[in-house]
Length: 432
Image (cartoon, rainbow, N blue to C red; front, top):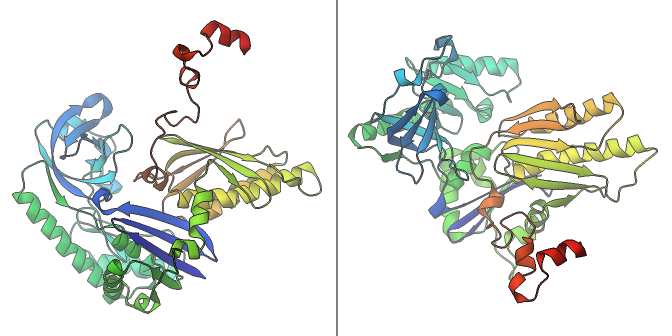
């Protein structure tokens, strides 16, 4: 049983996807702080940096956006020259550009933008200047891939590009054609607005979380869709009828029972609390120690209370396999991006190391966000990456601790005030 749950509370919308009672995806968004990825702006080049092969573009946000040279070249690799041109040959300060956000501002970094425009629909992604047809790698049937590739070539015009999404595998040619027509009209409106606007200006805003979750996450294997917000129920019903008519009959409104919310009733609240801790308990008794920085996530696997099976190697192997399953799930729930380093418990047998690696690869292939499992390092750590486009839910739902600054440790001077009878520095060193 696979369910999609939407919990609304004023400006806040939370969505969860649950499989057999287990949370496998989670997202949240406040309407006043909706995501920026996919937004299109008319910007002005502020500075060109030849040494970085990049430019900074003013798009009207608090920080200038970052534009790398690759994002100025033709999106079709076959049409690019073998040697990249100097970025000064492509843009100049003061030049106005139409750009699309591909990565939100995170920490002290501005947004990353591209001129490879892409408008996602229910079944496909429309790219007005790409000049090729692609098919999602998650569609494994070669006959179906060939059908979709042929359909894409029939549907695209001149330099247009089309990428068939996973959902296209269940769509008729007429549905694909309608999707392309709608996205083509949308692009023409964007181009017309850009011609009239003065930089910096927002030209197109990506849809909100509710429409995005229906467009991107609603797959044929979802049996039920629940929502507990009466103000959003009719909107969701209309969205389903417009975008995925078969799912309209699977939509139900959840009526709260007393003070118990829908997330409480489905066990989501308790799972979220456990899943966003720094120490996560594994079913066998082992644990994961989870530590995130801006660009790097480190996960340490421990046996904990699990004393295992027939020998030490078997105990370690079983704990690592269980950890691989849980890590793949938590990466989706917490929407972690960037570099991920996993310190599995050391295994003696190479075949066990391979099985743990393949287990993690198996689960990450089912992730909608692109993941790359790089492999084992010489120190026995496992490296992988996960595409990072938005601030993850843990950071959106929390504030940095003012006392420790997010380190989990209070500075000694703050813990023992010197001016109020605390130990002096010399006394401290003696005591310690």
